[in-house]
Image 1 (cartoon, rainbow, N blue to C red):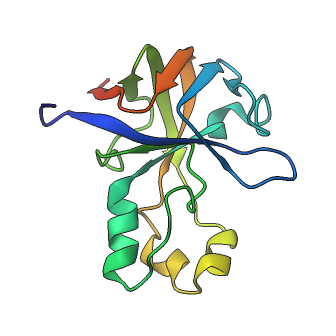
Image 2 (tube, helix red, strand yellow):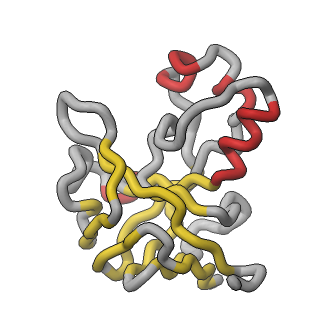
Length: 147
């Protein structure tokens, strides 16, 4: 059982050009982002979005029941990382990710529900970049590595 600083990868997603987001059992990344993702090698500091299941619970508690992946995340975890500082790192499987900044709310969330941007104002997710590449799989352990 994970300790208070550990969690588990619940779901993994990639964005594919002209298609719906794809749910994956594993993703592979290098310093330019997630291979096969349409945002690969675009904005390195925003290449990976990590979201907590807490965000989905918060939405549901406010009457918005949405499926995983709807918030645009690449990695969904059962640990809330939103209090981490920029530069803090997460060890996930064999990968180390560095937190770069909070995810800002975009208008695409309003398409899901007009109240969603307000509800998830500070709880949508965090962006990270790859510090050490490799593979992440569903159910991999997530460990916070504080600076």
